[in-house]
Image 1 (spheres, helix red, strand yellow):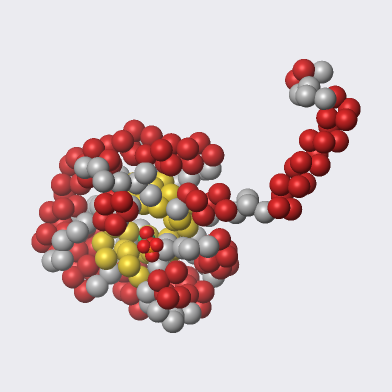
Image 2: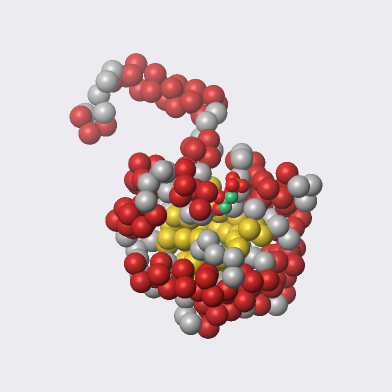
Length: 223
Ligand code: G3P
């Protein structure tokens, strides 16, 4: 099970990289554009924080030659360990094939259907990213689609991992995991929301109250 941060926000990456055992950071042109800062300097800052953890960076071209050149530039500027994210249409598959044949790490993105997921796996991508919430918005059954993807990967012995993305609530994350996604990328706020419950808060408050009755403000290390 892997958890990644779907953001390019430096403060958030710093904060949540300390809290959680994150596998890495994912980005796309939309996420980068939200930060209103330059592309490569933003990626350098992220790398500085996450070190050797995974960094997934998306290409922006629409034809294979452009996307391959972009991948070469990204890798030249960062390092060969970067996961190059490529949208999963026909030109994308061609690009993924070229990149995998040249030894790149590749993440197939913008996946809505099992057919995209299996075609991406057929060219040997490392991760395939189904878009959970966007599927729901378009009347696809996201849990069922992800379960089918997972089933096919298992049936055909594919090493590609499902990196589910596009979440709007924590229930969607749980459903993706239960459907067989091995990795999740989500905004840091959503990870925080996993612990937002009055039940959790009141349980913790009660422990503090009971302790305070015995020892006031003293901590265990002060006894
Ligand atoms: O990683 C892909 C993801 O960022 C897409 O999410 O919220 O734009 O549907 P969203």
